[in-house]
Length: 483
Image (tube, rainbow, N blue to C red; front, side, top):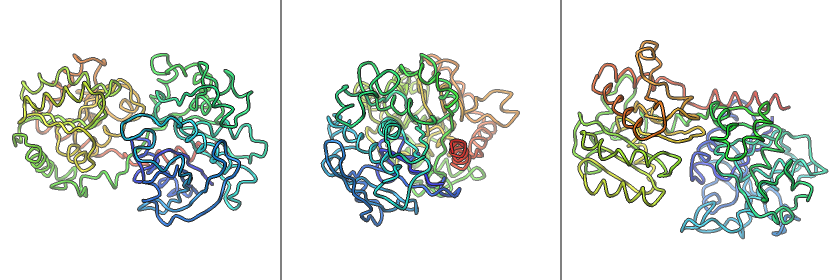
């Protein structure tokens, strides 16, 4: 089975969030199941620098507004998964990130940048593709950045019989642009209607994918149900409800080689479920490194997150000082909304021996927090899948979460019944507000002070199979049904 995996980012080449983790890990897992898979990425400077053995593969002409672009082929670092890279320097060779400049302002031509990515993905599925010896059976698109691909495939007269699927990693980002982009990107005028790409008098890349793709997947079963409701549908709930029979939720996995406390090179001491003593050494090293009072008994609450309303970190900020005054330490790594950055930084300045705040992103520190913290705090208001709660489970750091999306599908609340059944691995808030967050953390701390029970909760989480094997098999079955 030949699969074209179209994405705007893939770890370790380029990363802004969870999409990159999925795009780096899932193709390798699919290849391990026998798929002939290739990743398609824009040619950002980081991609051109890090991809292995890049060589010219094909040239695409008659592209909207830019004329032509080259297609290079190489391999992903550390795997032999082929990666095809769209070389169009005018679109992608810029300083800054894949979607915005160094100051955080979105590139004004993002509609063109990702319209071209979508167009080339569709052309690769055509009978007269310039890549004559490889035609995909499945074109797997991801989020809005590749959402126009199924629309292009639908309207191409020379399309090969490939099937398309779009995976929704976060429905909140929809890729909406002025209506004139329909013509500028070479889509037919007839596509601009409610039964097409039109969305509130704009062109929506995501709606195009949701409407024209042969199948839709999301990154957790619970999120697949949630996005058909007004609360979580972001205006797309009607379309998604009408396509519910084509919609499937498949819980993401994590890279269990990269995220493994038994071999993680960033940790002061490696450990596993049978040798949890090493986790205490990691905690002590983290406390010392960040200038916190080194104390084995003091509960250490960890946060690694974007500081946004979605992630619920405003709720945690409102109770953080109380947690500190009650004897907890807090270590936070992240960036986002200015008032939250300021609020957490002020807390760290006020309580330097109990609170550490690092604004930005630091890969080694994220691993050290995941391993060194006692409890991981993740009170998202919505969370399509979430990976950090899985990292917490993997590292024996029970998470405190809300009952939403992938958090609901991966974290089992701790109470008498789940303790007896051996399923308790974290703590789930009964409602999404600051009071319930406070009460749930206090409930977690009650169990934390019972060493034997806490160790069992840790081991329950560490025993879960969180890798990509089950998820990749579910995608293979979905592909086979489509074909």
